Image (cartoon, one colour):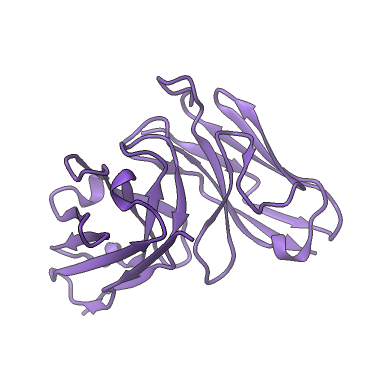
Length: 121
Length: 113
């Protein structure tokens, strides 16, 4: 059974930093691209970042480019999102979502339960 | 970026009646590999999204056959043949053919009358 378990979300001040983690199990982690998708309170879904199975290529949405860094540890089956220079508009539930292929493109299938990041003073 | 436009935004439906949600993309979603990467997701309050349909019309494992997806190019539809109470929530379409970024529709809230 595919399982994705996010952690690391908390209250952080504007300008602060945070690292989210997503522990994966039930599938061959290194064979799938992985993504972060966020959902602001009461709003829709917004793709944030993606990384291919090997970790060799990464992609970002414009609002987070230069501030967020996605990475993965295939030996531990963990996906990360390092977030810096956080803004109030980054407040959201952050989900990790599995890509269907090793590379980006295509679709996502399984999602984690999400972790809440609140940026506020 | 590809803009995904869903309609309606709100959909009140009586139990046992059909429901239909439209999703239109600002560009053709036919990918370079010949596939069309359009999916539908269902999100209940307080839960994460669950994929129902992938590549326009393929139901995911465990998804009831009252759900069906259709369409092509830029025009897609999710249909529920007979709505049940557990179908309440928000439905999103998503495209994975033009990236980055992947993009989602704004969501359609299905409520049971």
